[in-house]
Image 1 (cartoon, rainbow, N blue to C red):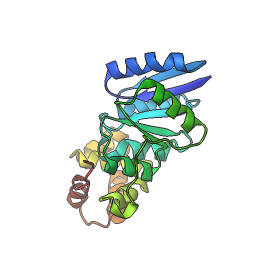
Image 2 (tube, rainbow, N blue to C red; image 1 turned 45 degrees about the vertical axis):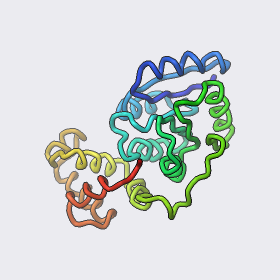
Image 3 (spheres, one colour; image 1 turned 180 degrees about the vertical axis):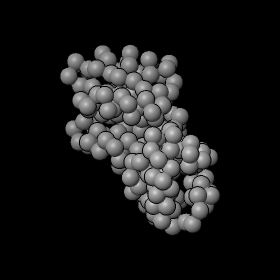
Image 4 (tube, helix red, strand yellow; image 1 turned 90 degrees about the vertical axis):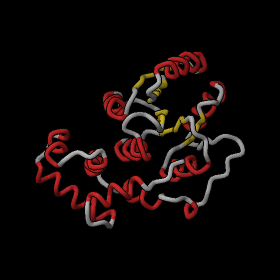
Length: 210
C-alpha cells in the first residue's frame, strides 16, 4: 500500500489529481488537505504517508513557511512541491531547503506519477531542462535558512507576529503563556539579528519569491 497526501486549496485540482493518479498506482491511498493547519493535522494523523505533494500557495504557506514547517516537523516524509509557478528562482529555493522534487501544475498526470515513483526510490525529480541557481544567487535564501533553523514553536510564533497578532492573541492561539510568547520572540529576534518585531516583519516582507 502506498499513501500520498495532496495538500492543495483547490478542490477541483485535488479531485482531478486523485482521479488521475489512482489508476496509475497499485494499492494506493490518497488523503487530502487544503491549508497548512489541516496539512499538519493530516500528517500527524497518518504516520504511514509515503510522500506529500504540497502547493506553495495554500493559506498559511506564504514565504515558503509551509514548506519549512513541514520539513521541520516531518523530516522523514519526502515533500514534492506542486505549484502554478515554475520560475527558476522559486524552484531553486524550494530544492535548496530540502524538497525532493518540484512539479509544475501544468505537468501531465502520467509524468507526475513517474516523478512520484522516482522520489519514492530516494531520487530527486525536476522538470526536464531545469538548471538550478547557485545558492549565492538566491536573494533571501540566507534569511529563509535562518527561519528554517527556528524551532517549530518559534516558527508558529513568527508567523503570527507577521500576521500582526499581539502577544496576548498569540498566547491564546497557541495555548501558551504571554511570558512564553515573549521568550520565543526574543529568541527569534536574536536568530534574525534584529532588535524589534517590526524589523522582523519587514525582513519577511522583503523576501522575493517571484
